[in-house]
Length: 248
View (tube, rainbow, N blue to C red):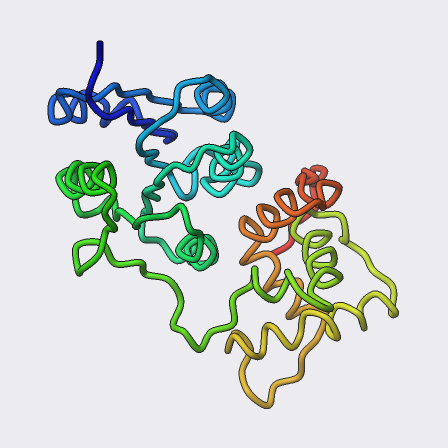
């Protein structure tokens, strides 16, 4: 009978690190899931994992706009089995929005930066299995400074739900052409967030074009938030026809 920890690694390139993990975590039951279907199968089984390591964003063109680590966290929550989670991050700026939400979740015990090599991950799994938290300079969260408003917090209250739908329409490619009234709403609902985050220069006019550009830059996270918060109709990307430009 296996007495060691049960570890799930949900990562697009999980097979690459699997041999090293097996060599280092000799008493562990290790499960690797490299795509959404494999993750769903692993999470849906009756086996309870002692720790789950999850890619925060998936370095896979086929799913980068439709699946990420926060989706995996949602899957785990649906099992109603509390499981410590370590998010594995690349350290790129495009992950910042995901990090801002991830570090606030109660299941998340720390952020592992892939650039630091495999040993911090191995150590982190051991810490998490023993009920600890990944802290110190070895495990920086790299989330936004405290004074930067979080997108998920803005979307989750008051006028934010309308702002989220508008942002989702743009990020998914469903709002290539809008009328005057809709353009005014874009500025009204999303402009304050963009300004408060310092992503548009002080004194510069906020325009629909600025909002479109911002939604393109944050598209991966905006679509992620929409599909996890009941806005599935806005969460799937519309691939532009030949000759059409995507939001940028």
